[in-house]
Amino acid sequence: MLAAWMGERFFRTFQTADEAPDPFDALLTRRGRRVGVTIGPLWEDGDLPGREQIERLLAGDIEDGGGYVLWAPPGAALPADEPQLSEFRLLIANGLKGLAPGERRELRIPARLRLAKVDAAGSYVSVAGGMSQLWTSLSEGVDGAFHLDSTAIRRLPEEQAEVEILISRVRDHAAALAIEELAEIAVHDYWLVSRLPADQPPGLTVVGAPPGFDAADGAAIRRPLRRHVQRASEQRQAGECEFAVLLLIAPLAHIEQEKATAALRGMSPTDYGSLDLIALVGDGRVREVLQPRSLPWASEGRAI
Image: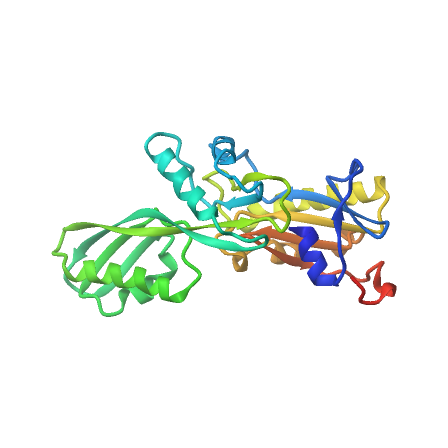
């Protein structure tokens, strides 16, 4: 994904090198120029439980030899028991079909909301979980006070029309509730899958942090960011390359919510002065965090 993004960003073609990348984590090449890449996840405390099992199961379902990624949103948990595991496997496998290299797609994962009416007075919906940012829209026009448990939703859809459908379903159920009544609302969580720009590595890669990780916690982002910046600088000093990149991997619902850019601004420029580019991958996209000051291939013109 980084190589494809750099190709579009700098109007050049970058390829993964055949040689061992040491001391870097990965190595890209451009007409003999070496691009050293350090890779660092922006979370701590282990891995997403069940990741390897899902990757292994889905590897047998992919028939075209392509490489795919399932981007688990923050706080999400992968199913471990039947029949939920088989249902999830089938849903993901169907969602990968027809994806062209570089494309991304939202998948609808069945979820349930819990809505309770707590008072006849007022016009207010308190919200816990993934729909908390929509509380003002949910509160418009409701008769009474309600509490909505939307912790089953980890990622809202990108299309506003889909968001409005969620809001309407909650309002419709609220209108039918009496005080102290509880309703379950069948909706969908919107996870994301993407196909890698090239067909390697084949199979499925699951990107996700442990369920307890809070992507909105700036301190939780700054700690691993500082470590990765230091390690990338050390690799740059120990290795030979014309261009040094730190590639951050972030568990995000939407890439617009990333905190790495703000965290980097709080660091001294001398900490990352030896790095040419810092980029972030998440939500099936690549975003520039630190812009290059100069490009070693600038004198080549715009030829691909």
